[in-house]
Image 1 (tube, helix red, strand yellow):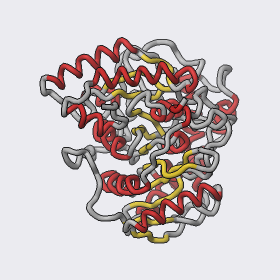
Image 2 (image 1 turned 180 degrees about the vertical axis):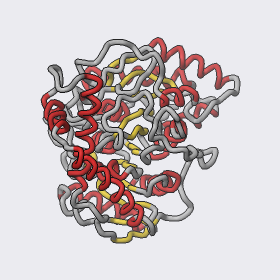
Image 3 (image 1 turned 90 degrees about the horizontal axis):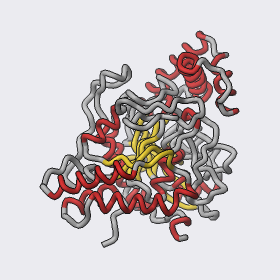
Image 4 (image 1 turned 120 degrees about the vertical axis):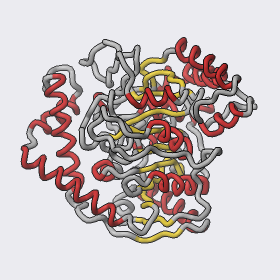
Length: 452
């Protein structure tokens, strides 16, 4: 049999004894050997440790001791997340080579679930704006996005079956869209950030990336839950898997709100048309579409979000790296200077706006399962930028969950994605809605590099 491409399929095949974790890891390492010199998705890969972990997982599964659906699944970890034995360089030249002495909480939870860590994936400098070395597997002349670019590109080329990313503006959903994979930014406080290099206390989210909505849900179930080491961590319980098949698909079509003003009106025409076609397909299959207005307080949203992010990023670097200093990239230097100029009254105003906008989103979402939108304003642009986060940053600002998955390909052969946004803490019904939609758009395209 051919090796499965998704976590859910791999877990099922391993339970039936059709494949082993060792075979999965060897297959991923083979993809790394084949494509990494071109794609540049990884900061480091520890083959020996991964193979040893795979042999252990193979033995455990053979003895009938599965830990979870992630047992034996090979993953990549964004290089702002601490993993014992590796430095956390965060895509920067001024960080230390000292190796982490303890795992970030998300890594602890993945290890407890039996997952296998292959290595650290590339991020943009300090998970911000300077373009990464990673290439987009669909077309090297176009950006893979930022800042979880390595995680997205590694998934798109089969180098791993799942990955951990982070989002402060649009750094899970945007690179996932640009690279033709799925990404889930959870509710703020759902996943611990302990052991993760910060960008912005009020905006940082850690979340899963994978090839399907189902796989993102499996990863979220493993990493979600309260952690007293993160002051923003919610005491709400984690995510429960729905059944033995690990599928969230509902038995009825979802009710989807659609906000055409701004999100469709300002989008690239071809991309908007592809999303409209996908929405029409969902309607044909029984989804109910409800037209919605822009939420209250939207007009000032992007300015308020940027003020929080800039001020808090400057504060992090002022304390940790005595910013500004030599060694930062040009966009990072500009952003730190911008953060230094934010006054306390401006910062307070932005925080008040964040609360008001989150409440406005709760009101807007009251009668729908989710809002359906394009994941990005346009297909991936050239490599001088990491792309435009303005279709993602509203949900980071509000702290509500956003799930993106590919749904079409442009005439130039670049993937585009649909994005579903739900209420805070609604992952257990956002995931079913997204899975239902994903199965009906039935995206099957692959990056051209895989045919070479």
